[in-house]
Image 1 (cartoon, rainbow, N blue to C red):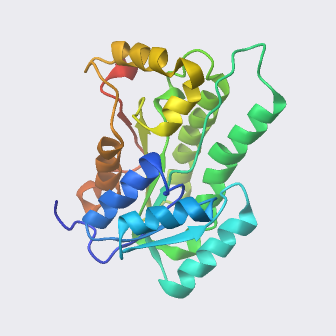
Image 2: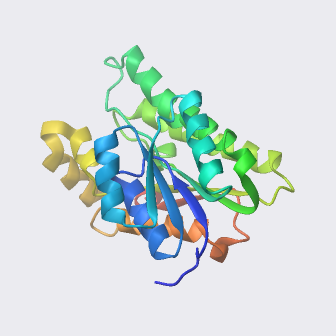
Length: 248
């Protein structure tokens, strides 16, 4: 690996596990100092220990504006700026039409939409010219599949918000892009299928033109590209990292 992010300050929400943890690891390998967030101190501490001395963990909940403001105040005091912001925290709930509950809608929109809005908005004072924002979306924005209508709706909302934000930040020098993973080999994916995990993974594998699902490290590599100056003229895109599954 190179050092494309040498001396950069990066914040990764939901960085204590899964894709977020893989992104944090990759950013560190590229030279960045990384602050990860999570809602649980124990999990966050273990993640920081695994990442090493260039990582710092701060407990934060993207569903709470107060929590995010506390996070960024801490970053301001210790680092003074943010060069790379990765809005990764999110989650989905499987439920078919007829079984969707109000709490399913509230929880997913609070994390995946409101959380992304305020993760970026509250960070704006710390983002300067040349800063890169990477939002972790999902191929569910265009291909949600059965039982994922609400989750897909939240990710489609994020795509449309970014279209507007790119125009609103005209002239600021801040870039915003989305990396949208397909099915990725994480604990959260397996947990989403519950007792039908093996059946679900077989279905997703069969659907993939590459004959497999993705690995967190593969998504992290795409996020790191969008975070770096290697993508300095890339702005406002949704980059699908799914082995081509959403194109079939």
